[in-house]
Length: 151
View 1: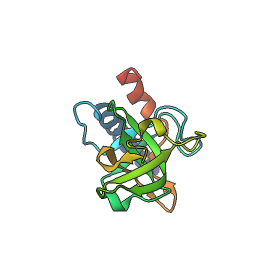
View 2: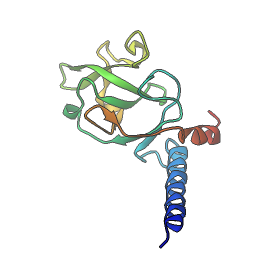
View 3: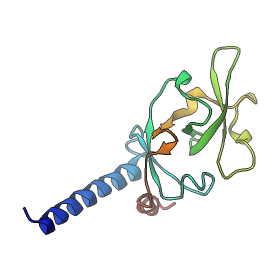
View 4: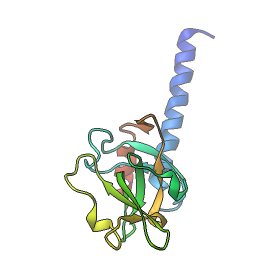
């Protein structure tokens, strides 16, 4: 197989994967709520994450989330938020609560906390896939999903 044909095949495969990711990101939160990806919207996680980045979300237990992890959680109204954990607390009943804050925000997400402790584990969708502070993301591709969803 010639180098040109290999490049063309690789490009075709990359475009196919990209379109599948956009489709999954578009449908997550609607028909396929359990799809483990999220599209970043807004600038609260700059410079790490930008609007339009697609991140992979991993299910994890409450004790697996630590200070420094980036998590995806649901607000009281069901909107998804992607922010960093800056504190972990355990309530008297054993429930884990996470103090969260956007990297580009001056203050923690007090408006999303319950009982003043933080975001409860039961509202956590998962943590963003990363290794040694390197977050796995697909940049820019989520803009298409945001446009399709009208956001």
